[in-house]
Image 1 (cartoon, rainbow, N blue to C red):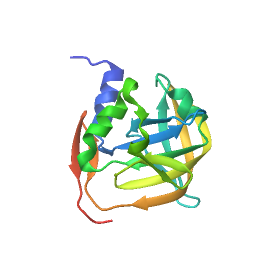
Image 2 (image 1 turned 30 degrees about the vertical axis):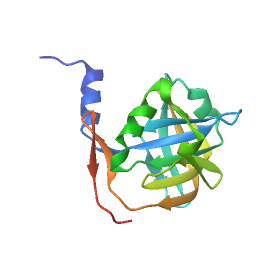
Image 3 (image 1 turned 60 degrees about the vertical axis):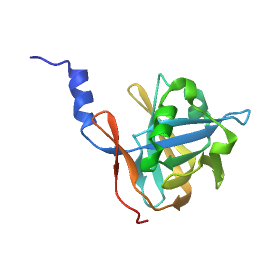
Length: 161
């Protein structure tokens, strides 16, 4: 049985377990938008930089693409509902009571880690925009992490920081 190369690629990438995070950015009117990502990667330790990927078809792409500051919340095991919610295009607005300021950026309340970032570079790659951010502030909490594997969510880890 022959498999479509794009489907084969998707299946191959689905067996690479990843953490789950929500990136939060503020638009010109001050409204907050969140988006679930599992493409989060450390890019540099000195200076502290990370990257994540923004798809061309993202409904709120302009909010994230134009943001100079944005926050990343690494989700805890019990936050699967948030991961699902912010993965859907029509439910990506963040209510004020769900957010907290981390440095000069906003993130979601709860979570295992919070990182406040300033956009350092944007780079086109196929049907995505790679967002590289300089990490300006970091907070870490204990707990198990939410992970994504073979199209589903699971948990890993314990309470150490």
